[in-house]
Length: 282
Length: 331
Image (cartoon, rainbow over all chains, first blue to last red; front, side, top):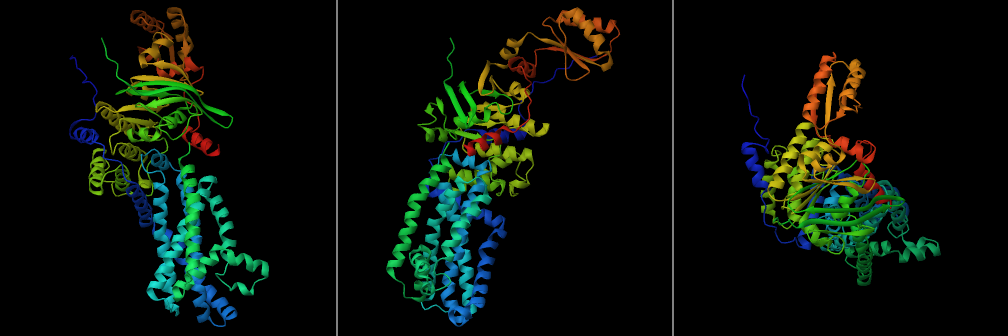
């Protein structure tokens, strides 16, 4: 017979414990991340998601291709007399439409995020309050760029030769993306108010469909009934489409551009603080 | 003379309602720095809601709290700089890799890119996740996810950590790993508020416990105090043959007075603080022909404490974190 003594239980043994202790040892707290660094980090998060699931770029690449091809060849002859002529009219319009459709997904993505625990961690971090939202929208901007590039490249392949040249096309794309950034805030607000991603999608498209179709994206407003024409003329989407056409053709109207940028700024000024408040509320 | 450590958490009369439901109904807490404080209660008791208020995610309807000296409503940003939260729903991004998750948090907490990467690699190695570092978190097992979650909370060492049911749903091995991590954290000086519905967990890790039921604290003290407050100790006997339980109950009732029949049909218990009397009772069982598989004399388990305090067992169905968050969104 012998008497054994059980050693007292301790934390993990050996090398593992040493590594753990070293990792857990207090580190000095770095200075708070700047607003810019925090937004950029969240933008990086958005891009990593695209990197891991590149399929999510399908909606910004395939549907614009379909839109361009369908509208050009289906309606071109009837509306403008020839597909080549119509392409010149509709390509900037499809650019506007596709990118504005994509803005709805910013709200859907935010709503999906909320169902996960990671948002709790983001909300409990000492960072610039709108950073998670601004960062996500910066990440979305990359999607807009991809979609826009696909449309322009396809247009060039089909024979679209804008007079504004490379500079004009890039300026048009920048203008559309700036407007999309402003409009996204409306959908992120919706994303925080509605209960499910599907509800956000439905409500979003219910708003964005009439706005894009009741504009001059597809047809010249002169052909419309008077009441509708009046609406189409003041619809910011029409003004955006006109400005993009102008930039691509090298004959942009400065007032249109100012109206578009002012609308984007106004949407941001109203809906960005609202989204931030809703995101942080508790 | 003893110098008391300052209070890391000081909450008075916290109240939070969601619609008609008063999820938290006047909770007071006092947590000393450098300790592990357990908040114990069944699902739906208000643990998650309490922790979310203290971590500045929810604004209390009434009452107030100071965390590390800062008011949780007026000074929320100062609180956020000093605490970290590991929620019941894993607070990591499933669509990123483990390494990317930790780098992202490093950047958000003010590290530059290179130190953030170094820190991420170091933490993953320390938590046994080096091999999974480049895998998407959605492919992690429950235990790996929990460890990553805790690693994410200490990218920059917090002064106070909120751990909401860190081992719920884990197998025993993963649970022990998480417990080891918690013990090491405390040894390094972090204060921890641990919510749990596992009585064993509270017993193993905490210095003091608040028992919460239906939104209020119904008991508070060290684990031993709580057990002592419910009753002395108890003799637990496990029989070889459950058929003999009524015979055994008769013997124990004669020897010790009261007998409690446990849910397990082979087990019975009798309150008894005196080892000599317990030994005598066991000997009497053997003499009367009852065959015994095992017996123990000890303090009542926290399960028994909970039953005695609330009148209902601790384990109940439901998922408090998701309920609390759903209620929050609905409100």
